Amino acid sequence: MMERLFRIKEKNTSVRTEILAGLTTFVTMAYIIFVQPSVMSGEFLGPGKPAGVEFMDKTGVMLATCIASALACFVMAFLANYPIALAPGMGENFFYGLIVAGFIAVGTKISWQTAMGVVFISGMIFVVISLFRVRETIVEIIPDSLKSAIALGIGLLIAFLGLTQAGVIIKHPSPGAIVKIGNMMKPEVAIAGVGLLVIGFFMVRKIKGGLLVGLLASAAMALILHKTQFGGVFAMPDFAALGKTAFKLDILGALRLGLVTIIVVFVMMDMFDTIGTLVGMGRQAGLMDENGKMPRVGRALLADAIGSVIGALLGTSTVTSYIESAAGIQQGGRTGLTAVVVGLLFILAMFIAPLMMMITGCVAITAPVLIMVGVMISGSAARIDWEDYRLAIPSFLIALGIPLTMSIADGMAFGFVSYCALMIFSGDWKKAHWLMYVIGVMFVYHLIEISKLGI
Image (cartoon, rainbow, N blue to C red; front, side, top):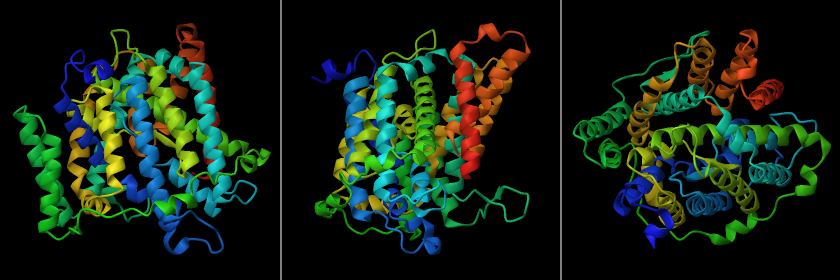
């Protein structure tokens, strides 16, 4: 049955490898189970949380996140057979939270129910454009160098996140400066360092399972240094809390004219984040053919869109493909079985919240996995045509823009706009697909709108 569903032998993998890959991916993205409730409940605002604003129930959001992520992973697995996991997107969730808090002015006060209606409408738009192959066409007409640059940018972003989680890189306190080296004597550095050494040893020796073993080594070090605590394994979830978030969305309220811009921003953020992630992961996993095209990419995009609709109905923000899938792909995951394993673990996580809290209680535990995955993905830089500046300049801006803006969509905007401009100025505008110019105009609009909104 496994062979018939996922074509495991054809993809030159095994059930054991796929299970290990799914476990690795899940552990690197499990933080969303605890981050999402904090964002959607307004806790992330701390003392700045506005009085009189109703936010969502934390427990309900946690359960909605687990269930929506699991269902989205199952859809990806059985519809597209890709080893890509899905969950509520980082960036879209904070955008949602700031809108509800009123920190992003949209001309009218928005309840969390109305904001969830916005997420649902944007998800339905994703479904429609996926059915009409709009997003699939976009993936196919992106020049190969730009696809490689997106993968490179994602690799740099993942590694940068890992270095910051380890405390190796911290925010610079001086005005005008951005980041600086952290305190190398802090326990977080030692925790990440142990994991990185273990993973490096496994990689050099070409032994499978290095990412997961390294993560376990970091967790053990964190326990020894008292940076995380073991609080048990099992806990029965309060399923009644799901009723406080599920099917509470206000779709009619979201259709008000004043929210059109917000809907468009959600659509743009998710569409290009997903395209960037699929291109980057497809490149790393060898899912692209000799022409740089991904088979079944339309199904993968549709699965992503369906995930957003499911998430909105259950009570969580935009569900999207996760760049942390790179960890499982690097572990050998090549089929939808990897995504199935991730989905099952999301379901299980509702019952082992104490154990998950221990693993995600110290971000330095997962830092070495992110750093090493970033190293692996960045090899795509070799496939960029650095001799043709019409491609080299946009590719460089994409690769640099993604980690510096902490957004795949924003980094892609820099590269796509510059690519269109260079093709026009060089007189070779006919060599670019006409849809690339449409996307370029869309990205200009995207940059203007997010600048107006202050995000």
